[in-house]
Length: 226
View (tube, rainbow, N blue to C red):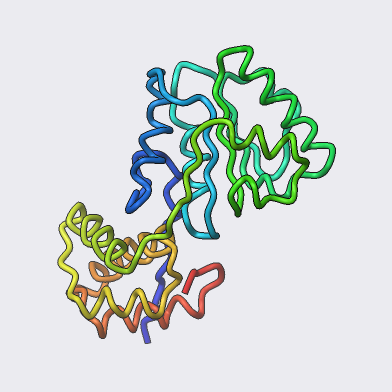
């Protein structure tokens, strides 16, 4: 019996261009303004629950290819951060007491140097268990609460990605994906790309029976997000 060989393509690197904004368009535009060097806000704080896109946006900002030197740090303030023009600090709720002090100093240095600093956390600044002076710095500029995509928004994003690949997805296929696969967009897009390859290998159109076969195969593979 032919063995199913279905492997997910690596999730695409997070960029500002492949971020599905949904209700987060204003936050995305604020980061684009930093990339473009327009006279936008230089201090931005993003907060929201896991899966809302905080890390995607910060990594995308750091990799945006702007003329200014940019770097991403997750849950810490790395050495040399003050040398960067644009600094992205993720998961500030995880900062140690030492790193809280470093971030406080970094805010002051970035402000004096006309740089930009974007931070993210799992709660609004006032609700973070951080030192009071740092909470006030985090509230200096614009603060955006990020919202996870709704099922309707995920459906629209999957349809848009399918159109790029010249695929036709039935309502039953999308509904089954949203019920039975991981619900973050990176995983959903990865499964859709794998499903496209599997459809070509099997010479079968993408239907619900094909999707069930593919997902069942993925369950028996390591590191498959089902």
